[in-house]
Image (cartoon, rainbow, N blue to C red; front, side):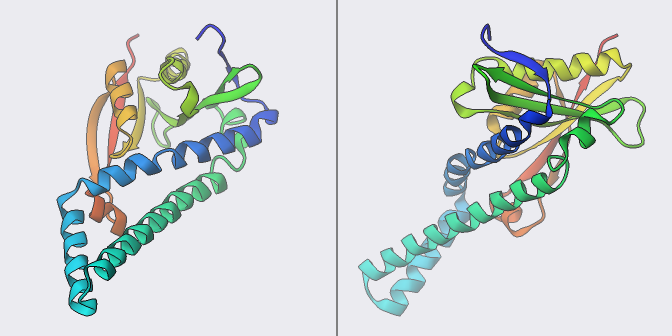
Length: 219
């Protein structure tokens, strides 16, 4: 961490922040594929597909090729799902970061910089309708700079920001596939408050859910 500077967002960071978020989402693709391939229901889909192809083609080679094509199509579908998440974020708070964070009362956005390069980021916003809670958003660290304590330091900036403004809780949510994020938040003292199943097709297939966390600020 000695060579990493945590500073508030500046307009010159715009492209780097959006690109960092996109890369961070894409980096989850391999682990998501591995997670899906471990599910029994996916095994059953692959087996049923293989049997169906064999009944149609009467060929082990063609049946195997059909399964490979099915898996390739599934991966492409997953890429589209991730791209949709990226596009939504780019059209929401990351479309105008200054307006969403820097010019908003009790909100802020930080970047982690090393050698002039943005390698991490995090934002915080007040929870609408609450005088006690803020929400931590868009935490991301470049893959080749992970496991260096940058994410922890960024989270601490959010907690300190909330404490200095009199808030009682820092809240956030993360998905099933973000294993490192779950470990980070639990190690920092966040507690799980609830989980919600993802109801779309991908969520039902992957048995995926969104887990909500809260950090109680000691005054």
